[in-house]
Amino acid sequence: MSVRCALLGHLAAKRMHGYELKSKFDEITGGFWQLNWGQVYATLERLQRDGLVERVPSNGSTETERRVFRITPLGRAAFED
Image 1 (spheres, rainbow, N blue to C red):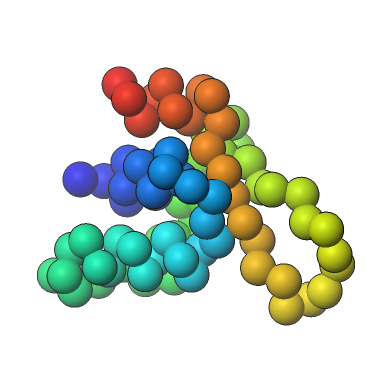
Image 2: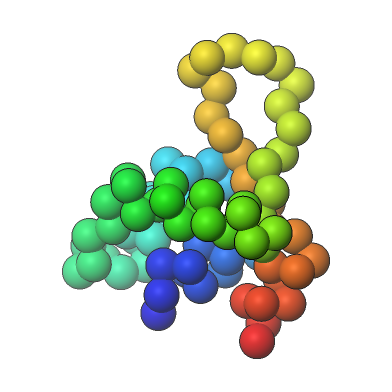
């Protein structure tokens, strides 16, 4: 399993922010594979750049607000392949 596929798979189920994605990844791997924060956010940036995920527009604008992502139709097709 690649980090890319794992994140796309979680986002195919529902919108999530980076913390939630890392927590789900850690839960699935049982701590066997320690994913670091840098990997999560670097992978999300690449997925966003490639059009596979997009940031969900926020309703408010606070500095502590988490960035929420969702999978795009292109990302869903890539995940299913």
